[in-house]
Image: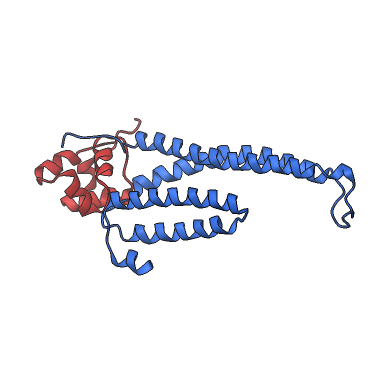
Length: 66
Length: 160
C-alpha cells in the first residue's frame, strides 16, 4: 500500500514528530508508514485522513492484485 | 513510592533508565536469594518490580506504545512461545517420565529404599535446565523483537 502522508505533511508544514503527537503515535510509526514498512490500521488511516481533512483514499493507495 | 511515581512525569528515556536499573536490582536480589537459600526475596522483588514499572509507565508523558509497537510485541511473543513450548514440553515430559517410573507417593516408604535416593540429583538437573530455558526465552524474545522492530522500521532514520 502506497501513501502520500509525506506530501500532505509537507503541505501542512508539519514534522513527523508534530504529526505523531497529534495522532498519539510514535514518530517511528509515522516514519514506518511513510516508508511503506508498516500499513496502519483502518482506525489510524481514518484518523490521518480526518486530520488532513481529506478522504482516506486520497492518502492511501491500495495496489492489490488485479 | 506509588505517589512519587504517579504524581511525577518522566520522559521516555528516563523510563527506560528506570527499567534498566530495576533489572540490575532484580539480578542482585536473585543472587542474594540463592545465597540465603530463600526464594521469597526474589518473588517479592519481581512483584514489586512489575508494580514500579507499571506506575512508571503511567507517568511517561511521551507516547511510548502504539499499534505498531504492540504488533511488534505480539509477533515477538507469539514466535517466542511457539519455540519455547515445544522445548519446554520435551524437557518437562522427561521429568514426568522419571517421576512416574517410581512408586506413586500415596504411601511413601519410610525410610526410603536406596533405589529412590538419586531422584534429587535428577530433579536438580531439571531445575538447572528449566532455568536455562527461561534464559533462552528471554534471548528468543529479544531476538524476535529486534527482528520485527527492524522489519517495521524501528531503527530507521529519516532526513526529515
